[in-house]
Image (cartoon, rainbow, N blue to C red):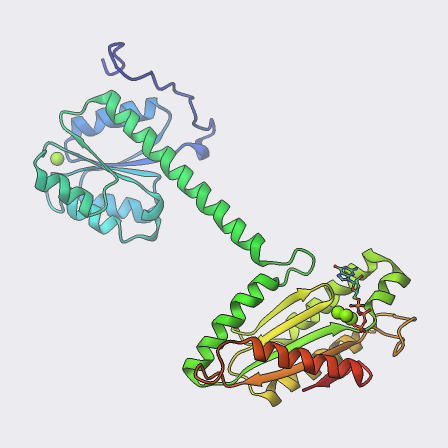
Length: 329
Ligand code: GH3
Ligand code: MG
Ligand code: MG
Ligand code: MG
Ligand code: MG
């Protein structure tokens, strides 16, 4: 009796942590040439609430895996044709294998076989004759580990996103900008290519907030951000929200005149939005001031990207001083 009460492990209840609907149930692919053993494993795991797919050899196992990747594979080592070790190596080539543990089952207990199994990617190893309570626990533990692994990766992705994206505008934030500027500066130094930077500031935005209120101010920032985003076209270009009502755009492999062209396009595009700004000194619409700078980075001459940032900032200051709603270098 596979559910003998002498089991040293607590009973795995049918409904334990598994979902009730068919879709939620983990799928286990069993590759085992011995029909009786296969039927036995299948029976026990089905009883535990898993969905089971059976394969009688390595080739069938690969085909079933490709057709619909399971949540776990139980793999017999000794099978005619492709053996379990070879099959395991092949399964590990599929991208899904990162989230699909493989449990090897074998009568071979020698060091070489054990090492071989783990070398080709098995997550765990069970010897024959199968100790059924051990098999069930090992299956459960592997599935739980994988689930946890997935959850951690998703949480990690989410955190990375939250740390690098500005919530209001959905543009990369200042942290992402600083990282990208440093990275691109070094890349352009290697390529001996021009790196351009545009600093952007909305004109009389404090007055805008005072006139229309903060929520309308937020909506204006969002619209301006979208225009800035639309005006950059190359995949390596990086628009970002630098701070409050300031934006910065990194343009790798771009000359000064190229960047001026992009900046002027942004200025005109915001003009065309015709966002009312009745109390602006150069109204009646929301406008941008932009500062542009570029450099072919040379690590011997210039230690960091800071001078480029200062140059773009000075150009922006100049645009403000010369009357705003303009692009300066
Ligand atoms: P200038 O033409 O010289 O740039 O004048 P300005 O008023 O735009 O510049 P200043 O730096 O004095 O004011 C920036 C304003 O931007 C102040 C602040 O209330 C507003 N601001 C910054 N961040 C946000 C935000 O997230 N939402 C809103 N609604 N306003 C913001
Ligand atoms: Mg066999
Ligand atoms: Mg400002
Ligand atoms: Mg300011
Ligand atoms: Mg401003």
